[in-house]
Length: 287
Image (cartoon, rainbow, N blue to C red; front, top):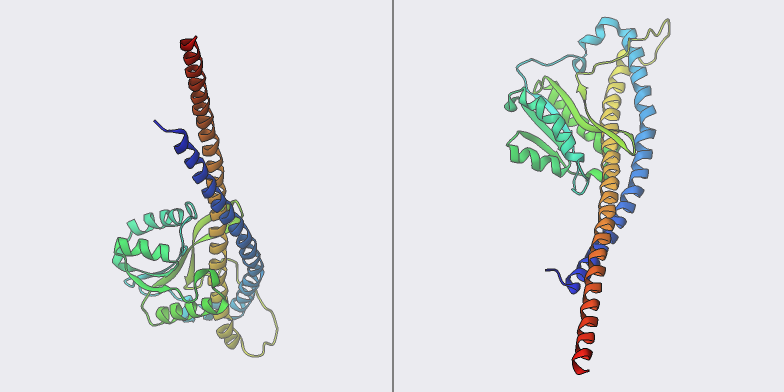
C-alpha cells in the first residue's frame, strides 16, 4: 500500500517533470514561429520559379523533353528517395506518420531497387534496422541549422547521380506544413521535372541570354527551392508536433498530480482519524 511519504514524493516528481515539459513546450513554440515564417516566406520564391520555368517551356516546345532532367531514366534503374525525418525524439507521431506513408510504397517494390538519402537521424535509424539501402546520411549541417547552401549541395549530389544514369527518378518524402495544428506527410517528385501547369507562351519576346541558357541556370534554382522548401516545412511540422506533444504531456502531468493529491489527502485524513481514535481510546481507557 502506498504511504503518505511515497505519495508526497510522487507529487513532487510529477511537478518537476511538468516544469521540464512546459519549458520544452515554450522552446518548441518559439522555434515553430521562426521556422513557420521561413517556410511560408519561401513558397512565393519557389512558385515564381515554377511560373518562369513554365514560360520557358512554352518557348522551347518539344525541345524541353530533350533536356536530361526532364527525361525519366531506364525502368530497370532504382529510385532515389530523399527522406526528411527528425534528428531527435519527443515529437509525438511525427516520424511514425512519415514512415507509415513510406511502408505501403516499399511493400509494392523490390527494396533493393530503392536507395535513400536521409535528413534526420531518426529516419536513418529506422532504415538501418530494416536493412534498407542508404546512399548517404546528410548531417552537415544539422537539420535544425539547414540553410539554402545545404539544400543546394544536396540537389547537386542528387542531380549528378540522376544524370549519370544511377536512378530512374528521385522523390522526396517529407511532412508538408499547412498550419500549427495540421501537417501532412506527402510525396513529391524532384527529378525528372514534371510541370503541373500548362506551358505558357512567351510570345514574340527577344530573350538575352537564349532560352537554353536561361533554362540551364533556372533548373538548378528550381530544384534547390523545392528541396529547401521541403526541409523548412518538415522542420516547422516537427516543432509543431513537438509543441503539441509537450503540451499533452504537461496536461497529463496536471491530471496525474490531481489524482495523487486526492489520494494523498485521503490517506492523510485517514491517518488523522486513526490518531484521533487512538487518543480517544486511550482517554477512555484511563478514565
